[in-house]
Image 1 (cartoon, rainbow, N blue to C red):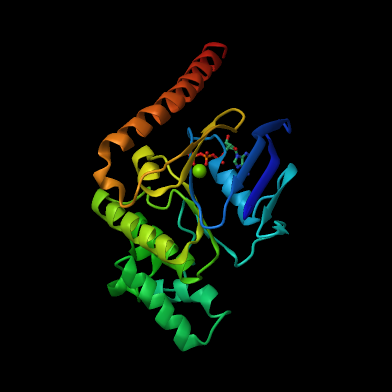
Image 2 (cartoon, helix red, strand yellow):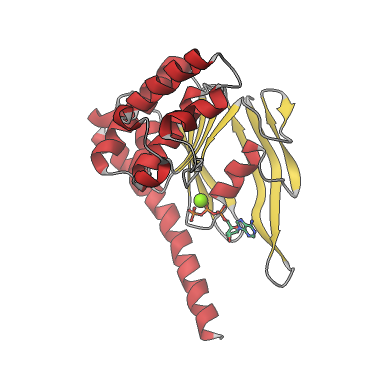
Length: 262
Ligand SMILES: Nc1ncnc2c1ncn2[C@@H]1O[C@H](COP(=O)(O)OP(=O)(O)OP(=O)(O)O)[C@@H](O)[C@H]1O
Ligand SMILES: [Mg+2]
């Protein structure tokens, strides 16, 4: 397996120094070139899981092997797009995308590569803008361009299209799918959009919460592009909705009983 997540557990200490289990016994095997989405209620540990795969957060127990190597720290084989675009505020858009590239290649090449991906996310006219001059969705597109420009073997994307309008989102779906079909990258993609996950992925991991566990692993075996297969997509959507509804109902009733006991 290209990405192998084995018996992964993560606990955080709460404000009373009491450990809370956020991820429990996560086992996930991902083949090279697979596009895997992760769906689950807010707070179930999706970002934490991605951050552990990225090597940014340490697991409490269990291990993650990517391409034969146990993950201990971040590496340029794994590109991450964070839920909130993490840009350097003191340099402009072009420099933000060039920043990691400059360590890998000559400046001219880095600039050409950065411009190519910024044009792809339709920010070719914003090269000299600073992050604070952009909308949240535009900042997110800079972060996507930066991750893609590094050309990592594995892409870890945490709700990358969450802040975008429907048209931009649809266009970027197409572009991401094209890049994936062309380069066969392994993609781990967190989203709250069931339809987005069905449109893009080979497999959908549905997570439950408190603690975060894998509820089910659904294979999406439809030809691409998938828009012609509305009925099959709808059937998968309904199946996922049933899983998620149960989890969300659970969170709501826990919150209500917590409120009542205060
Ligand atoms: N550094 C931290 N210290 C303590 N608790 C944390 C920390 N990071 C995350 N948590 C807790 O872990 C749980 C999972 O958080 P995480 O951000 O992974 O959820 P998520 O599934 O990505 O949610 P969302 O869909 O809202 O982005 C939450 O209860 C959160 O409060
Ligand atoms: Mg998150």
